Length: 128
Image (tube, rainbow, N blue to C red):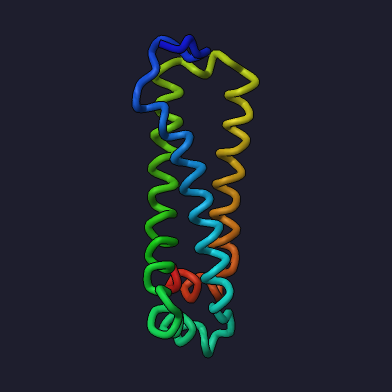
């Protein structure tokens, strides 16, 4: 076979880093499409969600992909971290610290998106 620079303990658990990239791409693309049709006004927020599901072509699919993609993103993220802990990847300090910084950035983004806009949180939560 081909001699690749891979660890000897490579397994299917190593696919979750790539799946994280796929989930993040799906989240960004579907989020942009949802943002094109979503209205943040308190009087029309729920009707804009209804508009997305009923009037936009495949809007229901975009909404469900965005909602379930967020859950899948975090599942892949935690499995990816768990795989790193299991195989001792924390020994590589620089790589591990970059991953920790990225984890904090993901958590901060989730906090900024769902917790801080108190008045609009439930309306955007209805969209996703």
